[in-house]
Image (cartoon, rainbow, N blue to C red; front, side, top):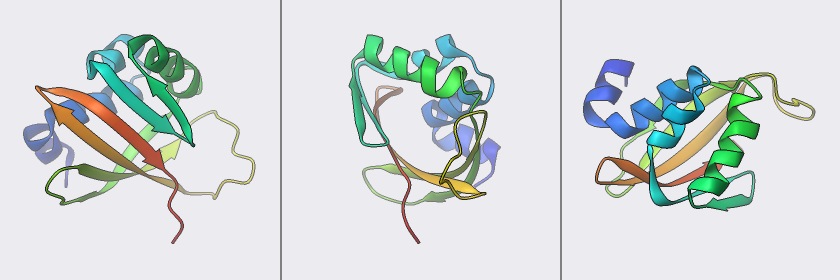
Length: 120
């Protein structure tokens, strides 16, 4: 799925990816519902303050970028695989880091995001 199709069909997810790639903390946070939950690397963050601290530390400060490689159809989730890069510690990570992102949304906001490094 190209970025235009993603923007047309999943605007809140497309806005999140664009904000991450721009290192824009306020824009990242604008994509989340007030009671959202993020699980990244087996760490759970619930609510805006907790998610903001995670996004600042793990996305913006580490200059993370995401390149969408696949969007998987599913009736209740948005499943998106993306190539991640940035200035984070890459010790013991593969040269090409592909993470699967499981999004749920409601009323134009992300209500949950689970990020998993699935094994082939």
